Length: 242
Image (tube, rainbow, N blue to C red; front, side, top):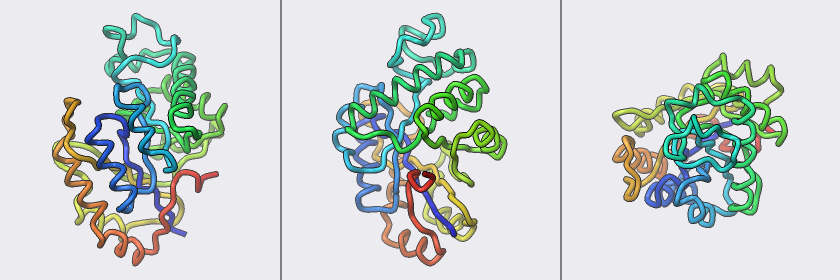
């Protein structure tokens, strides 16, 4: 069976991004999103997203930590620094992940469906170790982006997707043509398509801006649902891994 999760990253990153993500979920084919809980826009985003399938977009790259577990020497002006993530102790990552999960639940009024990581910082072994410990404690699935990561998660007793597709670069990844191409390549099991739909950020400086609007247009295009149905895809969220 071909089951497909289409997850929008960066809920709470910026009000315009949040607005686009929620549109893609409510009127398009996006089935899931992940919330950043330590931005100035997190609370408003969570309020607007209540009732939807929302996971944690673990943010160790920017903005202040939620817990007091992160060594101040690894912060920059009291905020996370993406370049220092590789030095974060696994135990601190575990405590910060648990704190961010608790904040998400307080904001949403519901627990996270899963966890993924902003900037894929769980490519660092220490971040992955800490994240796994927190995920096991909460019995939550975690996004895997490579076969190696997938095997590492499963070896630690953490549920994860079987396949992964998605990227963010100088141009929009999810054009309609690319969606059509990947739909034809779907395999049995649970596939996650990572995406970044939204409107161009109005409050936050971002290198992925106009690209978000291209992706939003792709995922709200009425042809997308028809195409995925023809491909035999069952649209689900990470709760399908439970």
